[in-house]
Image (cartoon, rainbow, N blue to C red):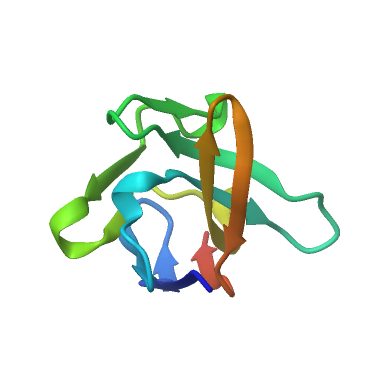
Length: 120
């Protein structure tokens, strides 16, 4: 069973930075497309950033230019660098890894989440 463990969340003032990490175990993360999602209290979970197996990245408009998703396959880790943080970025951030084969999703895994709190 694939396991994903997030870390790096915390409390930061507006304008600050955090780097989230998502480490995969029992598999090679290079096989997966990986995304970061977030969920604020009373809100639906939203996709924040996504990276393909060949390192193509996409972002929700609200974080473009501030967040950067990257992967280090040698460390089995995907990162989310978050700069110029705003109070509205406050949420629990989740790592999601999907395995696709021949156009079909064969695996879909989630981490436990890490809390990010940005004060104004």
